[in-house]
Image 1 (cartoon, one colour):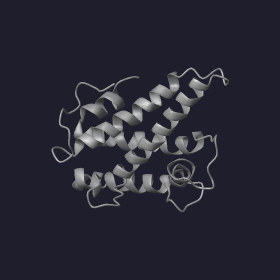
Image 2 (tube, helix red, strand yellow):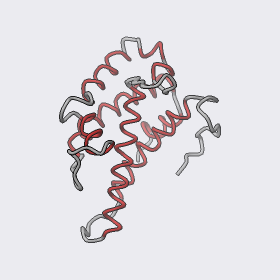
Image 3 (cartoon, helix red, strand yellow):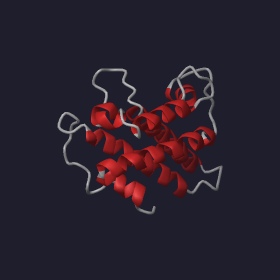
Image 4 (cartoon, helix red, strand yellow):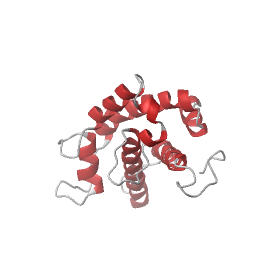
Length: 170
């Protein structure tokens, strides 16, 4: 589902917020989809694959949203919150939110942190991988922090995508 208020621009060169808006939509919609998937029958391979694909999508978009929010930039062309809202990121509100999310998310070499788990158990073909893994613990750690962070951004930007997901009951 593409929300009607999303930009019709096709490239972040036109408007870097389109990347932010897309990632927010995918983050929330994959969470919603997981809640509604019928996975009661563990022998139904289509249900299991659909659930796995949805979990993987949620994790990927969680990783991207987090990278945007903490302004993690590997390449010089990455979209970051610092690039979108530099004054707010350096403010008394923004700085502690960024630091808190960085601390909760952890680092790629910090074993068992959400960052490490997403990298080792999903994003990279490591020896840690398994054919089943419960991602609920790292997601329970990071989701409330992301939601709180996005709620604060919504207050200062009133981005339609954030108004929709933060203020509207779903």
